[in-house]
Image (cartoon, rainbow, N blue to C red; front, side):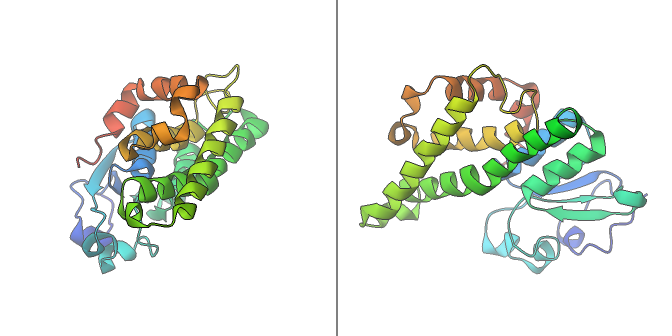
Length: 231
């Protein structure tokens, strides 16, 4: 039986089976990325619900695993060399799990880098920008009277959707075969509906992106991941 007692986070969210991967998350786009990968690969894991509140994500126990205070984070009791490994940042976790299983990272070195660049595109562009769209359209940013910040993020989100629309010409998935890049992009596209932002971004004028999201959401592993951990 693996010993995870060196990780203070396990004192607040104790594992039922310490030999399984321990996921600390909430079903937001970044959380769904990792639960999708775990469901797609069939790795054994336990999902612990970490609420997006100061009491939980900024608690000493959670900060001991992720000093940035954001979900998701993960402990693999069977990490490199058989030693437990703690990880945070959704993109890093996707790459790690891809290495661990040998899946969803592309074929060969060239394929891996093609997948990686689109994963980084999501991490550096889609996630931060779509998150700001949500802030200004659905959350507290709605109260800001100056229209310039809101329009800045809406314009950049439209541009990013245009990049993806062009990339998907002749492709079902962004890097050829289904990969961690799609697992990263899909949940953020889905989040635009929750934010109520689609009409502002010209969603109905897109053809390939909505079809791409439909393909992603049709995957059984994705359907399960959308509810992990239960909200």
